[in-house]
Amino acid sequence: MLLLDQDLRLLSENPAAKLWRDELAWSGAELPIAVLEVAARGRGTALPAYGRIRGRSGRWLSVHASPLSGGQCPAPLAVTMHPAPAADVAEVLLLAYGLTPRERDVLARVVAGLPSRAIAMELHITAATVQDHLKSVFAKTGVRSRRELVATMLDL
Image (cartoon, rainbow, N blue to C red; front, side, top):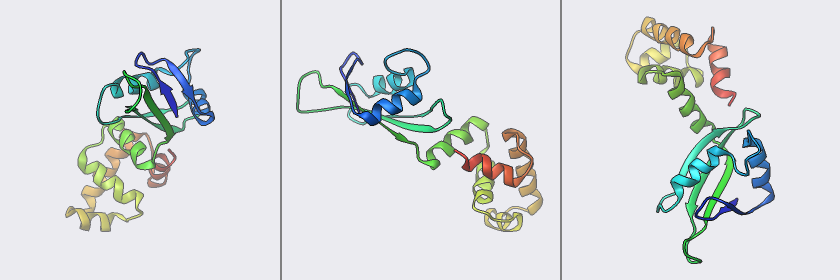
């Protein structure tokens, strides 16, 4: 956890936050710009701001920021960082690859291990259409096989 003032200056942090901050730091800045961006969105809001950020090691982190209450005014800002859930990262990747909703439907079933016929039955399309969607997904993600595709999606 990080504790920031309203000007987004670091007031305090726990040891885990220091490790995550080091994972995200790309320059000598006190706080990584991505953390500052989430914190700026969380300042003065009732609901926490949220972001998913890829660290230097390739790991994805979730960052949440929201103002604290009941103390000094203006309230300090609490920022938490933790490993991002795989589903959140997959969502980012799907958007980044520009997959259509139907391609995402097919991909979800491929990741679940379903064969083309079962995918076709579930989605009420032909197996040939499933293959067409898979070819498009392969092209967009830069992979050549289902195995590579699954590995790409699950190796978050």
